[in-house]
Length: 386
Ligand SMILES: Cc1cc2nc3c(=O)[nH]c(=O)nc-3n(C[C@H](O)[C@H](O)[C@H](O)COP(=O)(O)OP(=O)(O)OC[C@H]3O[C@@H](n4cnc5c(N)ncnc54)[C@H](O)[C@@H]3O)c2cc1C
Figure (cartoon, rainbow, N blue to C red):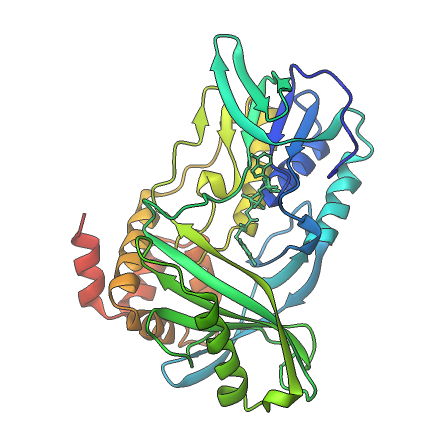
């Protein structure tokens, strides 16, 4: 059970379907808001163990769930195009939130509120009737809330997506100090480029790190196999970092295939609102969603407080969809472009301009400066392609 068990009415108020990152973040923001829109029930079928999850992301603004972050970095490393650069994050921090800490922080906001609780159950369907949405559970139970938030996670298929992000991370323990505990490696391209691939190293200390092999792939093609990810991580540890196979342990920690899409489904249908990955909040050209989900939860709570409904949400500028679509197209068709692009984008002392762009906080002038350094031909062709 994610929150306190719900024994209240099954009609009215709000139902949040899915107690993962977005469902929990939304419940916390609604519970903490001055004007709460009625009872809040969180439904989850328990398929994901939130306590084992962790999310890394960059941020430059304070948020409600900040105390859940346990590690914070002011610099990152990028190895691309034969260059090794340690970059400042300026106003940003790269942070890690562990699922158990997130849950504890969410409960700190929900526990004092009487009419917030959770139900364990598998949601099979949301039926729209004349009187509003009806949520059907596998065991025959029904809920008739006033508003439904569908937070049931990323699509299980990549069909129709612009690209897919395939990744597998290993928890690595080395007997000798090999990782820089103060600087995560966001991109290290010293790996085979059959797909657009890089290694990601998130250190806990000098001997422990999450080492993840990540590939941008064609959404219509097969996923990268476990063995290919594993071999890439082993080669990286031995041939690139120079570790002797006998002095290092590695066990699989997390992995998946995320659909990267620039055309998410409509978020609001009647009184059913999609949130989280289901709403297209995975950043299409990076696969990160943590910070977007926080901002979205905050905007929904603000909209309820101001208008009594959740629909006054910031609009995204259409140009970012065009950029992401073009970038994904070029990366899938020309896998080597990713390394070339990152070598150019991260060729300065600060990573902040790139992060501002990924956050869609950049101005057109900032974007012109960033893109001016990139090889123009493939991007222009991809922008022109519909
Ligand atoms: C392995 C992995 C690592 C990731 N790492 C990062 C990262 O480091 N940084 C980052 O920014 N993003 C990361 N992401 C991307 C994104 O942030 C996560 O996918 C995030 O968890 C999305 O949140 P969500 O609430 O939409 O989905 P989820 O967190 O997946 O939550 C969905 C919830 O819905 C429940 N559920 C599903 N179907 C039903 C049903 N029918 N009935 C009842 N309950 C149901 C599940 O039990 C689950 O609790 C990662 C994704 C994956 C898969």
